[in-house]
Length: 241
Image 1 (cartoon, rainbow, N blue to C red):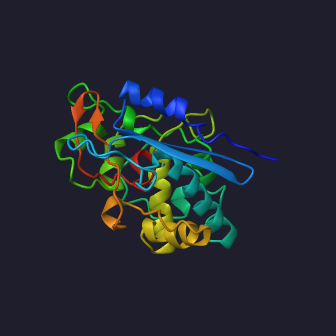
Image 2 (cartoon, rainbow, N blue to C red; image 1 turned 90 degrees about the vertical axis):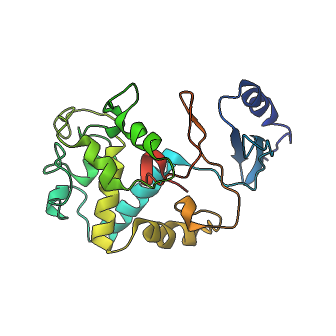
């Protein structure tokens, strides 16, 4: 039988709150069908209003698991061949010239054996990664996958597909483009149809612009530089859900 002490998350959340490494945090502990959820911090650094478990938080790279589910679902339905090159299953001519894009397979993209460069490792003009500089340049402006993928254009591959393991966020943006081209739908709609609705995820949204009538916790600080506006960087690096 699973049991919980109601104060179980308190120690870690209190420590987080004292460190002030971010404005707010949400923690859930689940076991055997039981769960405890708690939150600490503030929803707005100017007003100091406290955050609650009713606020919505970004889930970031956890969207990668959902992308994997979507791809495998399309493999089961037939439109996608798991072991065929991406270039044989979609038109890549409109995509930036990214190394390995002509030969990499779905399997290699999902298993992080693509060798494709991680766009967030590309340096910017200053002391920040190029994609962070894009955010800082105009925080409220949504950034789409094409603009992010363009960062990796012309950059050398880390290795040939299948030769090694390396986690690149670029993989998941490419898979988003594949999903959209194969289904003919926007990625947000596919997520809702294939994952959110069947799983009863009624409080999950793709992008803060979707609107849910609930307060949304936005990023506030990056290496001492503030930015408070919403930024739809799509699925992996900053999938806004």
